[in-house]
Length: 339
Image (tube, rainbow, N blue to C red):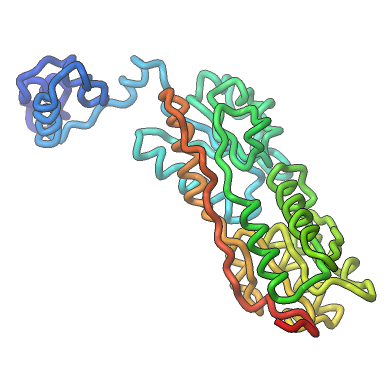
């Protein structure tokens, strides 16, 4: 048994369970199946619990040649969405003895372009948003086991992709607005070259093509309230302007609110507005915003789970993460529509 005041070792566990240290390593490393009996495995686990044994991860990592550290590469942290992604990824990582290093892509304000002398030596793998993919080459992250978030699975550079059902979310928004009688649409699109925003534009246009009498204009804006305000003000000034604005992001929707107020256009009486993400701003503006809720923490959890599967040679989950339309006060029947 371990002496008082000392940390119990695997040798102490082996003595208490009446087995070899090799058997303890197999059981606590979850590699015992087919090599020791279930009864022996349970005896080892019970001895470890009783002694309060915790494996020395540093020594174990040296033996395995693993750092148990992964890198999460995201765009510059301008919204709480990617904070949620990090929270979810870190939660799953900690359950498996991994740590997560957060690396905002240096687009705007960010860390030095190369935070590692050798990423391959410092990391076990990378999780990256397609919006921040340009940072992968700079840190040679594409040479490591890689999971891509929000990425086209048909052309992804990663060993696995994890996606939200963005296409389904856009269809939910569009059907909701069509059901309210809207036929003149404005798409306020994020001016960001990314697969996820390409999907939003494609799905919106495809759904509207199915409905006779609809029209669609597109205006582009950086993902900022000020940029969206300017873009929306120009787009709403037309005589036969839109009755509904579909925004790629909740911040863009907040910019539409400001433009509408400046032009004397009422939301939702004159103009229905929708967003995507369900950020804090969605319930801070008045009326509260109808938007597509994306579960950022689940997104991060699934991303980390996929990377663990890749590292262990397993197949990750392949299905997209469901999203949910949250209907609030920013949408109403189109003027003159019989709903």
